Length: 218
Length: 242
Figure 1 (spheres, rainbow over the protein chains, first blue to last red):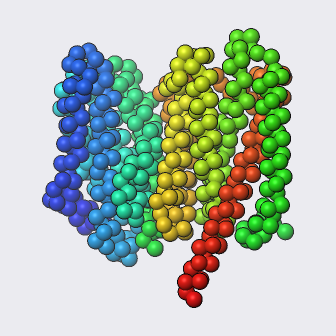
Figure 2 (tube, each protein chain N blue to C red; figure 1 turned 120 degrees about the horizontal axis):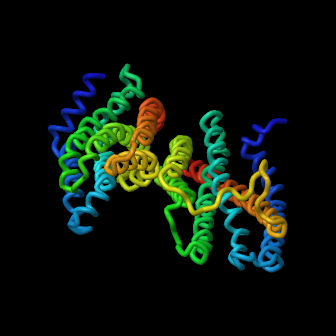
């Protein structure tokens, strides 16, 4: 398990692209938004939590097809299927590696980008907390989508279409927690719901992803 | 004699062939009665005027949009557990009908909303839930279309349907939490007092029955088409083998 995780992490960091891509996309979104909506700081600080969450979600979406596609092409997945490691564990490790290379950098970079968007100072802790709780769900759900479309050539569009509705609850609670935090309101309810979704998908969705992968490898 | 006998395509074809004309005619009769009665022989509502009559399309289609997904969920489960091909094909056949029902509900709602709420669209929980349901249908159909091998496609779409159902329910509650709505609460229910006056209610029942029967007819027809397409391709494959 450890070997698989370090291998995936190394590949993501060294092979270039995979690691920086999400972060670069996040930067592009936050830098371009003020040009799109105007530089008024009041307006920016009002939409900042939503924009940051949306940017993080899209950055995750962008890197989803890398989770499994390369391993599928070079036959690593077939080897993993034969390995003593259960498929559920392999899929969870893949999702964890994706989160460590995409989700975690976004969480760390978010306060910096929040500065650019003039987020009120009360909003930083809820923003980081909601991203920290929410982005693992994005990775796990994304792995399920990637497993569904792994056998399809140029399945990127289909992957986005499949994952889009699955991301809705996470985005709603995450952005709501960040928004309430920015306005100085109570954030515990959306944060609890967000944590519930995240732990729920971490516990249950790997079974679906593994089942789907087994069908695809068959 | 059990239900599972009809998992046999030959038995299914025989039974569905006998039911199909009845379903078609009954649904036609119900729809004509319900719609003509509803559109021409009910009074205008004292506040909503004649726009109230869109209820005869909106309510049955919205009802079916959800129930079609439920049926797909059941047939997907049957496919995963018992591997009956007819069941997987029925789920495949139902999805395009469901997407049309969802679209009818959304469009008639927009047409009614324009004069009544002053807007075609609002990010109201019910409207948003239906939009998400629409996306689920599109993803499901696209996945069926994208995979060539029939059994793989059936497996993958069934699992998508199960996962999607859980997330559809999650979304419904998340959306409720996110925004308060314009849409009125449920008007029809089996266990509560009814909110719709009898003059409007009776034709509505005919319309709902008509939509249900229409769905039964369409899904049987489409499943029969799928079975025949399977038979044809099997036949062609055998020919090629010589």
